[in-house]
Image (cartoon, rainbow, N blue to C red; front, top):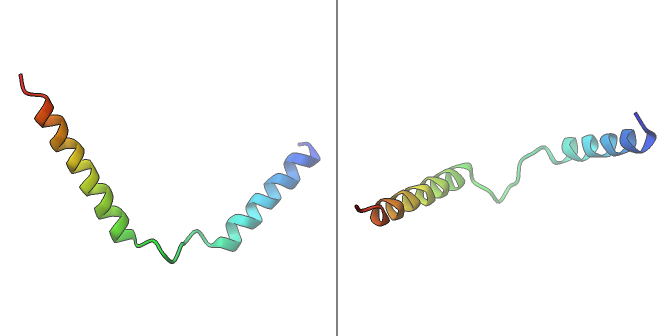
Length: 52
């Protein structure tokens, strides 16, 4: 492995560990229900335009 790739991987690993992967402003419930609502809206639109 080249030194540049090794240092890049080390930097990305440090960044991933320091953040913890959690963002305080995003609620998992809000994100999930928002995605569900968006998909249901798309499903409703598709069924409205798919009248034969």
